[in-house]
Image (cartoon, rainbow, N blue to C red; front, side):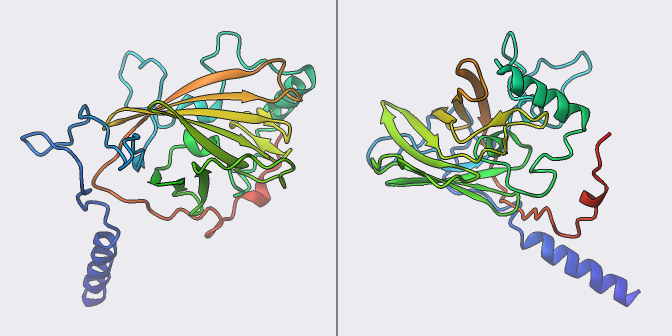
Length: 265
């Protein structure tokens, strides 16, 4: 009994040490203490919107008749082009590749193998992400594998011959209250979603970040990869603020025992 009691006390101490209920400073609140999500967005000293905060994801699918409680992940994570009228405009070879990946149960998906998901999928997965914005730099931190992405806002040009990387190389500039981010230098084996939509080193991603209110982040994403798609395509994400909590470690390879069984069909 004493051993059990000590174990419970240690577990409680560990949980409280994670700061998952610590009040987030600077949050505008209503009279009853709830976050005022419709309050104006905070701004940096130079007057530009401040995107700093911890952000979740919003499922843009219509709710089924019995409500949205069972929708545990945004549809864009599964199929990035689900909302496009005719789907993604794949080149014929890319359409066959996606068909093959689906038939193989996406066993070679980098995220299934505990590899990085890439810059776009960092925005669509079901884990929290934190944006930290300072003059000249915006950093996106992800709970998954303690990963990060850097978006430079110091007017630096994109590299002419980048070494391919998981997140690419990102440079942003302001157009009014919108941060326009261009990213190049992706790997040829990048996946944009769970069904296997490809992205290659020829691809360029353009994001338009807006914060219309304290509680909402809007991200418009355009992907232009002539190796894979017949034309550029655009999706829109809505991300809600998450307050009074903190990021928690999720290390995919910790006690991982599944990848050896991923054999597809």
